[in-house]
Every structure is written in C-alpha cells, then in structure tokens.
Amino acid sequence: MNIVYLNGVFLPAQDAHISVFDRGFLFGDSVYEVIPFYQGQGFQLTHHLQRLRHSLRAVRIHSELDWADILQELVEQNGGGNLSVYLQVSRGDVGERSHSFDEAMAPTVFACCQPIRDIYSLDISEVEPIKAIVTADMRGHRCDIKSTCLQPNIMELQQARAQGAGEALQMRDGLLTEGTSSNLYVVRQNVIYTPKLGSEILGGVTRQLVLELADEHGIQLQETDLDYEQLLDADEVWISSSTRAVVPVVEVDGELIGEGTPGPLWQQMYQLFVEYHQVLMTGRKDG
Ligand code: PLP
Image (cartoon, rainbow, N blue to C red; front, side):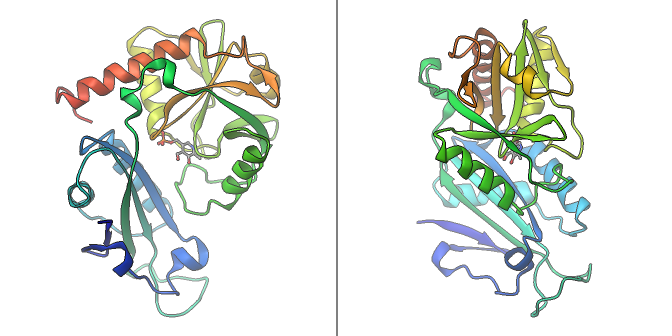
C-alpha cells in the first residue's frame, strides 16, 4: 500500500487531502526535498535536512519537526528497501486566497515515497550517459532555495526531451548555472570545474559529495564561472543529483563531448561514489 505522511498522520495516499486554499497549491509557496533511501537507510539525510532548514528559513516558513524520525517511519510503513522520499512543506492555508501571509500560520507537511533502483549496485557499464541541450535559465534569482515553483525547470526539461536529450543545462548572463534538476561539471585537462555556490544555483547534496571525494582523493576541482565555449570544448561533462549520483553527458546541442563516451575522470568519480555508498551501507560512516 502507498502510505503517505500528512500533518502528523500516516495514511493511505488516496485518503490524504489538502485544502484548495493551501498556498503550496495556489502559489507554489512551499519548499521540498528529495532524499534517496537504500535498504531502508537515508543517504546523506543530514545534509538534506540542513538544506531543508535553509530553504524554510529563507522563505520564513516556521516548521521544525523530527524530520528524520518521520521519514524513517514513512519508509518503514512502505516496506523499506530502495525508495526516493519526497518531503514538501507549504506555508499552509487560511481558508482564502491572499498574496500576503501571516507568519503564525500552520504549515502543511506532506511526505510520500516511490521505489527507485539502487544506482550504486549497477555495473559501471550499465550507467546510461545522456545528451543535453543548453537553454536560457528562466528561473528567478533565489535558486539556492529548493522551492516547488518549478515551472521554468519543467518547461526547459520538456524542451530537452523534445530534442531527445535527458537534461537542459541552463545559461544566465552568458554563464552556465546548472541543470533543471542537477548540478553541472566540466572536465578539462584532468581538472573538474563546477559553477560556484550562490543564489544562482542549488547547493546540491551530491555536488558537496563530489567536492569532498575529489578533495579526499587528490583530484583537482575548481569552483568557477563556466561559459558555453568551455562547455563544448570540455573533455568531459557530468551532471549530479541525489537519485542519479554522477551521470556523464556525452553530447551537448548535437556536439560530441570529447570522444562522445563517458570519460576516465567520471569513471573514477563514479567508482568513488560506489565505494562511499558501500561504506555507508555497512554502517561504518554517518550519512
Ligand atoms: N539543482 C537543481 C535545480 C535541482 O533541482 C537538484 C535536485 O533536484 C540539484 C541541483 C541536485 O541536488 P541534489 O544533489 O541535492 O539532489
């Protein structure tokens, strides 16, 4: 059975209802997280919850629950295993439509999950490289907030899909920012480059792990501005996100990247992710 969590209660999805005046529904006035659980155990859970608190603070939604306990219970009620957990906190509803809000209002907290495949159990040859296109970044200017206002992201992704690509890499003021649901990396001469953190990109939990693993294993990485030419001229391009780890991009706007196959540095990073995941799963590290 598909059990969801809504405002303190675990119940079947078909029995969960929210108000038509909920501000998440009316205005996208809500924030969210997507957290993978493997074998019933959260992956990088504490980092996701830190970012959730950052998003909540930034939009002045006052909600602090025992997030980890709630999500663990949700996962158990859905049979454990490999699940992607979605958690959304909206500002709530006061029974009418009004742009302004009262900071004392009670948020709506919703969580659900769905099966995912364990990407870390794949053989490296099974990881499917993707093609990407470059699109204008149509989002607002607080992309560090994980907001449910995703209309620009989904329109850009749809454009990518229509062209047979798996992600749209966004550009703003001549610089690449990130994918519609992923962070971006460019490899040139054995150095990984990725756009700097700031309000123009989401501080990806997976991005942070890429930085840490690179540092730990002596791989050079620089956080820097990247333009279109540097992208097309790269030896390798990757994207990263929680449910996909690191994925090689072998073609951008119809141009092959490097040889048009996953590159050696991506292979090394992917392997490091697999090893990191194994250590976590055997309980020797805190996720
Ligand atoms: N950037 C955007 C816009 C995203 O939506 C996401 C994930 O959904 C990411 C980056 C990657 O973040 P994470 O690694 O925390 O999943």
